[in-house]
Image 1: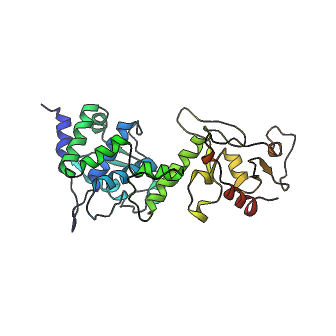
Image 2: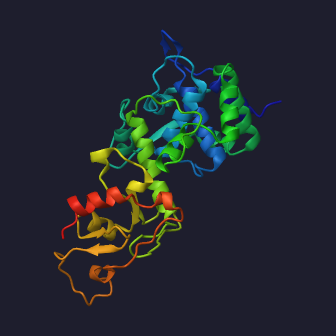
Image 3: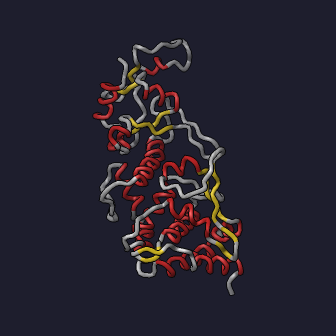
Length: 320
């Protein structure tokens, strides 16, 4: 005999309202629910707040590529908004919390805009508790797979078991490693750029052991906030290059000085300081004290800042 709450959500999950198209009923809502379940299962979502970030959008896209065999248009923002309309015994179970001063009264089609106005999404408390129970979570996941993706569910199960898929491909691309087997992308969408930029921000500080490359400073908080930035050497707007070799980990003041050409890096990975800098050189945190100091580098040489990117920065940004 199923727990009544589990039974309630199993019924709701098996009867999702899905828009009809010429390709059949839309698969967006069950993909989003499977994505939420996966992020809870992995420990990526640890409290009842689901942020619009690279992990959420990338996992949604990964699941879409593994499960959807029709020509439906993949769109994360659609179910993120419209799942609010679903009911379990007359009550909603997915809600959006706007950022202060913002409203979300309609479907926002841009993932970048959505992330700028939505603080987080959250689940009804009873569903959140269910999804934190391994047995109940597994049962609801199976309901979704059996109901909507019976023909393709093994694609997903096998890929997850092997650690393959879209997110692995994107991470490999940014790390300039061989692309993974499940590469499906012929052109990059706004969501691809959003995911890659989010992964870049996470990967670069990790490669530098969460330390500023110039000062060695490492600072984080008990709330999991890191104060080490992933800095593009050549701006993304110029090259759309999110490879980690076009990045360096810097604390905010070093990041600002680097972007404004007061600091740079020579061909031997030593710090250059602009002659146009005006400061109190006796101050313990004077930038001029960094001149000639070797920067901290990643453990693997193939993750070092690219020489051509640094040469561009010295030529186009650095104030000699």
